[in-house]
Image (cartoon, helix red, strand yellow):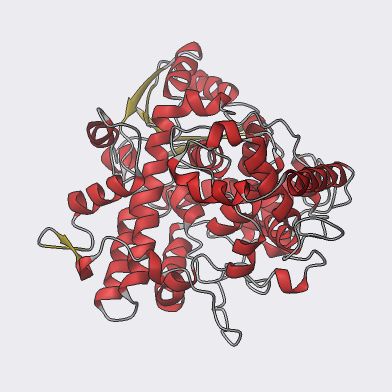
Length: 508
């Protein structure tokens, strides 16, 4: 028996690697898999470096590791079975699905594959299905409270600690002008990581110099993501010591001078398997219990990890086929080139996209209320936007991006969300400092240099009135739409059309 470890299952404390300690390990670097999309160079460097470090740690611990660098998984499996005929493989169930395909592939290559449960999450498949079956749709708040009760996290004799389930009202502040963002941790690439960075540059089209769609990509010197468990634990401790206290109130805020704000920056480590969500949650709660972080910050963080992350994974698992084709608002606009180049005068979009280009990251409000908000109101094909998210973010996997982008960010499916998350410039202005330096006027909807978000927002409501007006959560915004006469509406449609033409021509 050999344990097959995928590139996002890098844990020696959970799954078959932990449970079958006398069995050898199989790992395959598949170049073709990495070419499916124009992945961010830092994403490729992160995954392959983390895999090689995991291999080395396992070998140092006395485990035998069969490590193949191949064009495809098939080629890697064939090479393995040539050397180890009739070997039986055991694999932790992939987080995003595809177990049947891998089982068939192993059989075709001459071996057998047994799939075992994935215990890198807090909520099992069976537990979620028991909660979800028979319900009228998925509601995150209900699931989150269910998980709090199930795990006992932030609970006190059956009641939520502090008397409230969430503290959203305390977590929508913008920092004062004199607030100095805490510096995020940096991890100097070691020899293995530097070798991977050089290999990525040489092997994959575009590399660090040119993205497939134009413009300069990231500098390898800027790579700073944890690639080992030791580094991931340091990142967790740094977050709890330096940023967790202010995470809550400022979690929805955006500033030009801080790409990280007070966010944990742990998503890539969690998604690779370097950290388990349970230990991350417990360490955050310990920080609260020690008096070093307020309840609203810790509860907000726990809700992201215990609630939203687990929720997205299982909703994707159950609704994957629905999400793969979803486009209920019939959005057909192609993705503008500036999503790849960052070349737009809109300061909010420019700053967020340039951050993604530099380091493969943007925090959740930038993803939802800048990137997805623009795409939804503009009318961009949700599947095209999802492919872009999947390609450009270091923490992106299908189970992560698809429900967040297709199910929530663009409202392409109502399997997850009950309303679209769209907003005018008012939201961006309230939660950021972008508008102050932007050449577009936040207070104007039509006319020269009017903020594109304003006309696009109202045009979106008008274009989708038949689909959205009956939504009980949209009543207030449509009452404002009703206040606009036909001349004003025509001006909005004209301005929105001009914005789309400018974006297509690279002149927005």
